[in-house]
Length: 628
Image (cartoon, rainbow, N blue to C red; front, side):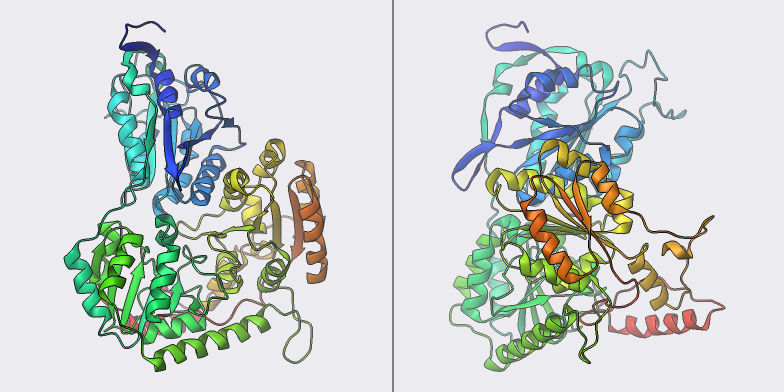
């Protein structure tokens, strides 16, 4: 590692790792390393050069080996969520299939505006050995590799074809991951030969740097316009998204709502902005929402959307809000702030809410609207009590449901345990039925709605949680479909000592999509295991035995009481603990609280039920807001 007094000669890979290790961030007055480490599976495309560099910095940037590139990057996403986007982890793979495995994970990070650094091997920049192992050739454009596929799911993309490029590219990549408006995944393609090429890097490139998350002050005129509109509101409602937590604006949101008496409804990503017991928390809104939130949303005349991208599950495909309601959208990202002709307030949520509160001094919602919110919330609370009960109103035992499982764990967990769920039926059921016990304690991945995130994301979340709250649990809810799709990080969690409590709800296949299939007039086909093409009689997977084979403790239960007792044993366990139980595929779904959701239904069909569903779709479309 020669050089002169102002430079040091390093390989590109060595410089990349050394620069990463020198980056810090200030969080609540504490200076910590910006990158929490990484996940890596080595192959010929990254082991000899990047691997050599990572080994030299194994203490500053610990590397964790997962079992699948997709799940490793998902774990990095789970870590970033738990750290509220203030820290990130990287994931590295060799070339070819190892890299393409991470496309799905990049999609999760991109959709959810989360930082993720992908360091992937690439073909030789010189092209002298071409075609190399795992290289996909493009005859008309030799500059293209499979790595170009990441351009659609990343915020920043570069291929480092000379070591000097790193001096410009790596800081820009880090800036992107820390930018509240532009936050998202970064992809750096690292050709095998360039990783090992040396360059005289300036020593200044490796000086320690402390980052701070930018807080963009909103434009005074936008604040003034929004304040004027709020003061005319007779039925205002706040839609609180995940951006509230990323801004650290939970206290400001709560204070603003309390000062002006405005009911708060939450998106899926914003589900843990207010604890359930807060009197202004009127529940989740949208397709996976609550009667209380959706009733208020439909009648609101002014909607104050804070830190949300207004996805279709939040807006009920834009049918959840009245057509003449005015929307104020507070968001750090201009793109999100202007959706559906919203009145934009582009800026940091904490600063914007404080500015708005100062300009709306003396305003409070009419008592009639406040009373309406209280009434709706009380009725929803009573519905939840019945929905999570094992006994029906008639006194008979109900089939075991997701809602009962969620209610049971909710009763016996610690208020600060973290809950992770994703895709399938559980996101809707967790969102609707989980009574939030502490702020920021719920991670429902429903931006990209990615099956398989549950266990992998839980593993990454546990890494982040263990840094600050090692005595709390990370609880993963997963269905049998997601479990079978991606479960290998049970083994990873045991090996690394990052304990999870995993609740596996086995309903015999992709039951929620079967429900959608049936609800749109279609017959059951290829979703439940029993409705697939089979060579043998369908049989249940022994999830307990499978989990034990990967080193976890595990058991199977057949009742809600048994589940609660098993959870106590899981909490006492020294390693990952899997609890498996069967839930009903047809009965017990949360039947209330849903807005309409637009899905494609055939215009022409021989099935009269499908034709009826199409007719209903056309009628429901009349309720949609027409926006931009």
